[in-house]
Image (cartoon, rainbow, N blue to C red; front, top):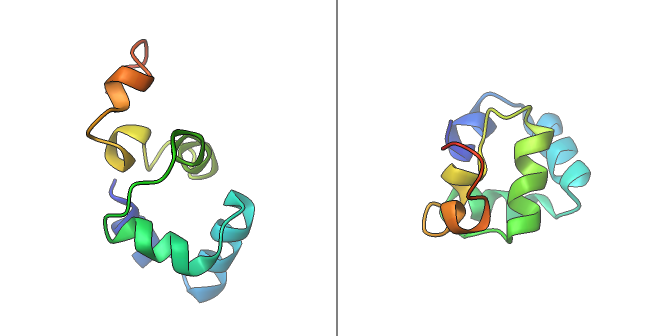
Length: 73
């Protein structure tokens, strides 16, 4: 699932909690949902926090297979 769609399912408080748990500001979370590419570490963190609903492959489609070659897309 795209991060943008995941965020649409959350209220403002839920988005703020997600950003806090990820260690980023809510505005940066919004920027990522709009297409900004997060670091590999943050991508993996967001995948874990969302329970795998948002994947590293959706967050970093340009190089995810190079960074995580053993995982399936």
